[in-house]
Length: 169
Image 1 (tube, rainbow, N blue to C red):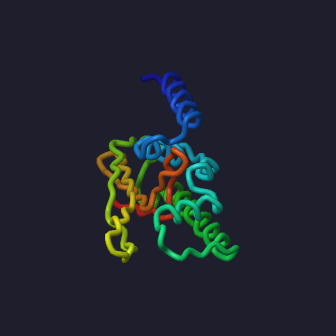
Image 2: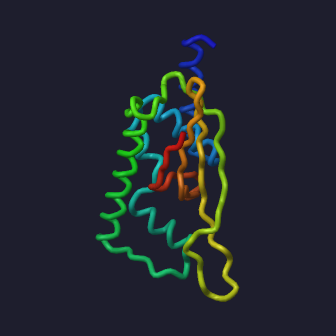
């Protein structure tokens, strides 16, 4: 594929995803990979829930829990959201430490899976609460890397990142 064809392909892909949202976890994974690869860090703002949305997400996920909805909680969430985005930037920019050539890297696989949450509802006959995970497998040269995203959310028809990321070689 020529460079010009690749650019057109990426523009069309981003236009489609931005127009319709991340309908599947795999769409979210592809978009996150491209955002990191192209250093378009401002796009991370659209890939995580807003502080006001996180309360609704958590209430839906943990219906019997007593959730803190105070301004203090919202400020704490905003702090963690900003910290998550800074970690994403560090992972992208610190290529000396991790030896990942982002420009020549490819996304080989996006794995979505669910695991039981450690915070289960203790009421009788309650359904298990599941936590969503997304692993991005990235190839760069002869090496493969994995970006793990824990707690991804499905909200208002689109998938969003949580605030937990882990990088493995």
